[in-house]
Length: 276
Image (cartoon, rainbow, N blue to C red; front, side):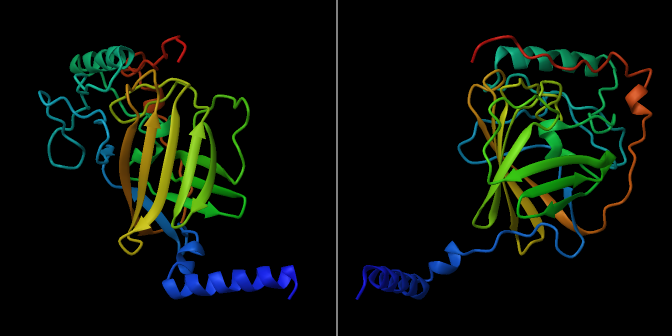
C-alpha cells in the first residue's frame, strides 16, 4: 500500500472513530445564524452583568435610586457608584464629574438618546432592534436606532495601526456555536456603559456571541480591558431577545443632539495621557 493510501486509511479510521464517539459533529458544527426568518434582537436591560470571577462592573450608587422609563414614576438619570474597587483614579474622577452634573439637575442623556454613536456600549442600547448580515467575509451589525453600523471582518488580522474610530476596528471568526469578535482602535469619545464610564484609546473588547434557549436569546460574553480605567479586565454578559421584524428606515430625532438645556452638560471624556 502506498504512503498516500496509508495516510488516507488512517484519516478515515480516525474520522470513523470520532463519529462513533460523537465528536465529529461538534468539530463540524454549523456557524450560528443570527439573521434567519426576519430576526432582529432587542437589548434586555441596560447594564452589564458580571460573569463568575469577574471584578464588578459599574453599578448604581445605592444612596440614589434609579428610576427607568415606563414604570409610572418620574424617571431619573443614573448615578455611578464610584467606590467600585476596580476603577482607576482617572475613571473615578470622570464619573464623579458626571454624578455631580446629574445631582445638580443637568439632563445627562445617554449617547443613543442624543443621536450620538454609542461605541463599546453598542449592545446596551435599548428599545430599537439590531440586525445581522452574515457573509463569508464579513458580518455587519445594523442598529435600527439612527442606522448605526458595525462591520466585523472575518478571518483576517488587525491592521498594524488602526485609525481611531467610534466603533473601533473589529475582526472575527467562528468558534463552534459562537461568533468571536475582537475590537481595538476605539477613539476615546464614547463610554463603556450607560453610567458614562470613560475609556481610553487602549480599550480592547472581545465579544463571544451565541444563541441560547433554543434561539430565543442572543447572549454576548464580553471581556473589557482598558488599563486607563479598570485595574483588572471585566468579564461580563448581556442578552438580547429575538423579535420578528425587518429593518425599518429610522432617523434619530435630532432634538436632543442640540438641546439648549443639555449643551455643555455632557462633557466627552478625555483619557489620561500615560504609558501603559
